[in-house]
Length: 299
Image 1 (spheres, one colour):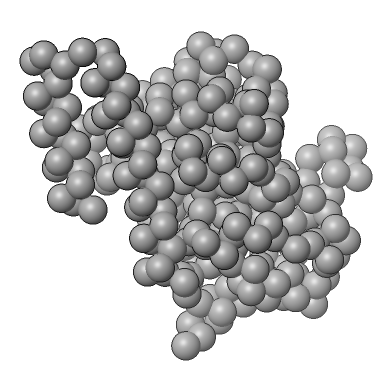
Image 2 (cartoon, rainbow, N blue to C red; image 1 turned 90 degrees about the vertical axis):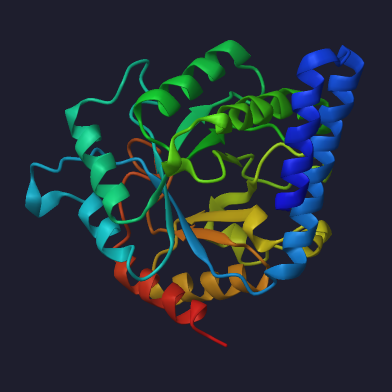
């Protein structure tokens, strides 16, 4: 894959001297094909990749209240399982840099080796793209994120170009010299349901949430057939209203068997006063972490 990246870099350098716009479009298409090839090759390499927690951390970082600092429980779990935390100050970055509490919380997460991605709503492809890009710019400039989580995503082919533009915009920021970002910013898309396979072949994201719903709907869930063609790291599931440990463990077993690389399960529910199932940790949080660690250690 390094050879391919070097090849693209060389062509783009040459293009800056005298390429036509048509040639640039051809290079963009080739870059997209390489993205897809990377996805398919990775699929062959990590059939048994480890489960990671994709955690909607929609909880205020009250680090000053040591006895009730919920982020501390997340930080403690990071030495057992890989965690990707979605931060969401106020339905996005709140139009400004992080306040002192978020600055401290973000610092704590980074010190624990937790990957941080920033929440951006898309209103099912109805939100103005410039507003989305402005949110992305804020996260990248001020929040020290390593990726972006695009929520409220549409899942039909006619919306494909909208999300592809967002994907390319985020990936264009990967040219940053900030060493903390490694190979570049990642893109996670959340339609919360099955997408047309063109969303993978275009592509529009590194990881797509194919299921975000109640436990009762997960019990008989069958992933789309195309999931078998790709790496588990391209798929995530977020399951709420899971009332006890037994259901939680059964759900984790099912996620691993169904080739989901990212998962999070909670007892919280949409049937609460604020209709938000992601603003607490479940009482079985530690048991969930331990069971994922156990699954990851299986031969």
